[in-house]
Length: 245
Image (cartoon, rainbow, N blue to C red):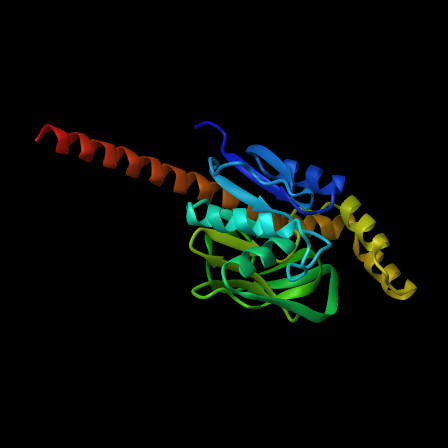
């Protein structure tokens, strides 16, 4: 089967780490768009789409967000499968009718997260797993009809609605990204040192289990694409039969 075509809406304000991380984790043909510069695809000719993290909040009134939300809304209507990470998780929830708010705290560092039931997005991932987190906003109300997939004491960490998935944690992060992010944050010296002490090879290796969400998402996209192609072939065959009667 040919490589999947995935649109990546990069909302990370031109952070080179984000481009590197998603290109490493997504085994597909990627078309990347700088969302913060107002770039979105011109069409919906993609097998799937991914929305990255961002230092922005989805409830801000930044000019660049409206085109992004508009394209995402239309792409969902076109049945394109989506995976949102951190800010992308929140944006997808917002577009689908959920609620995103400031949670009054900042979760950062390697966190324990609990799965809620079974989901193919979390196939192969333990019921309790480690992942790097960095967020002060949360999805306080899931979109109508959405299913929660993961959580911890801070917030919801995963949901699904139809062909749309979101995860609040950062499965794509490597140790370089984590360290640079923490140094950019306004943290007390004590908290900064504590978080940096967590960014070890051992914790990174343990958190690599969470990277399976990328493979699982792409497998889901392949299955959806196969079903859609079969349906189109069936419709074409039915139309041909109808014309011959």
